[in-house]
Length: 243
Image (cartoon, rainbow, N blue to C red; front, side):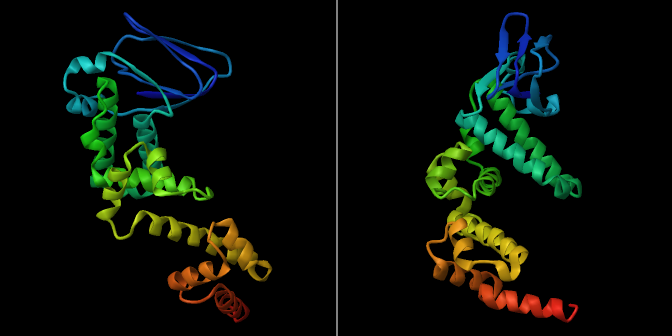
């Protein structure tokens, strides 16, 4: 189980050690072990549970599960875990329809939990391109509004090396920055449709960090087949005729 405290404080007491979890910290522990705990008033916590037998299957020794791991959420291995778990949560609808996808997601999460509990986060597992790709895409989607969203920034957000990040995208259909551009274009498209004739192409281009309106228009046409202005005209014509 992982307990991520966002407000207040939780104290866990085991047979030999005590762990105090404050906002911005996470505690990963084996619930089969004997724990006493107390919460400060108004404590808020996010809880993630992974089946024990799956975590155990990745552990170097069963003794690894007898301890807890306490860390800041800014630690690279914890950033990686949280990005991956959030991506899984966002994909819950797709996972519900695929037993094999659920198994892969659970197995990956269990391996990450096991690595943290052992005190030796498995760098080899984090090098697994598909898992890194999922975590990286989630980090990009959460930070599209950042003007400095570069490969180096994404690698830091995810908690992997720049080399590992690039290698994960090398096996996919597009580069990291191509994915960033496509996501920003989709956001811009949604804004364009919502605002309609009131939309300012220059303002939308600036808001989604395209260098200028011309750059935005070229990329928009490449993805949607027409310029923003023509796209809005066609959309308006469709609405006017009831289509």
